[in-house]
Image (cartoon, rainbow, N blue to C red; front, side):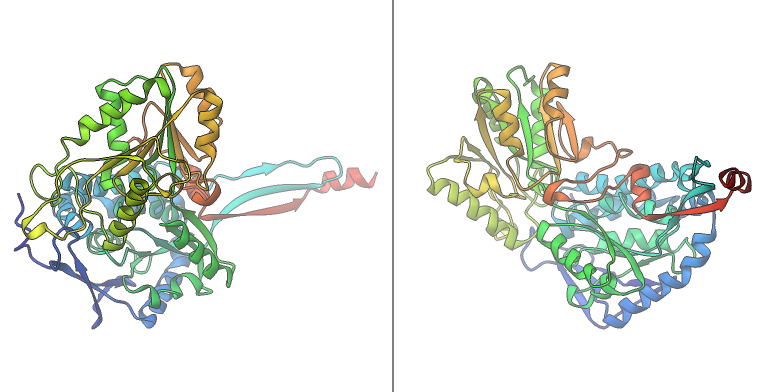
Length: 497
């Protein structure tokens, strides 16, 4: 067990144009589990620092984009080498600033490396274009090519910041862009440490890190020298980014919130393996994952069985500091989020819903931390906010249905379209129902971030976002397409006759 009361404070700076930079203004980062405990401080960039980062990335772009994709991949492979040597220390810092349990923080850093290396496997496809031959009435041979955009800003959230960065950053760099990473202001330390170690091994300006207050960050979005912004966060945050980007017609990829439906058909398998998967899909990171299950729809004949299975697991939940031995659920990251989740749970209680809460709040120096007892809301009114809004906390509504058509209708009756899942022993039923869910990613008999295929395109529909990350689609999102047409004299002559 780590003694987090005496752990050293972490101090991080900016990294711009290949050089570390300190700032007089600092962000104070607090431990969400222990009120008043300071984890460390991060540099708070000024508008001038932001402008310098954009200028450094712009200056590095010509040489970096002139390389072949294979040359960039080789440089990136060298830059990521050895990143895992500090993973234990990175995970400890992330748990202290984020609140989640150590193992999740360790996996967070691991997934960044996995995604980076999977992206490098796409190097041979990056520059691959196509040729349109001459055709009747079109006397040209046209080459369709892909080219990088320029300077890209990647903005990541607090919950899985390092892993989420891996879904976009390596693809942007491999495509030939230079990048500026903006870690989350409430939990920037571990992300900054990891990215700087990679950036130090790349040519100066190719990869930059800027932390600070949002009020000084507009240049990362609205500078005419920024070609694209890739943002992961809340729906409202995505709307703000999109509105800001509109002033310069800066492109955006937005990976936003979800209200994921998990649909359990009458023949769903509810053994320990599948119930463990469901529990993790709901309560991992204290429910603070965009692609967690947020609404469970279960055939009425299996309702009691599913609720009992979740209740059994929740009865074993141990709330505590993320670095403490035996802790299975940490605090919520922000007091405001704790207050919101408390509010929607109380609203459900006031409406007469069957709300079942589990676990004990920790005491001692953790009393007053952002802890919340995990809960199930059984058969709530569908108008309650615990159903209609993204909870982003340790609570789930479990809702019965009577037939398949009703289940699909209820699952799709939401503003969101990030992910969904179908649980059934029948592969044909899984395909039938899964293909009707209006969302960007569907699991069968599983759900959640730990089961994501890191090679597959990922992104949302409806208000869950724009664009796709991962895979060759993720690379193309950081490229533009151009056509080069060359006159074919023979085809032109044939037209003249």
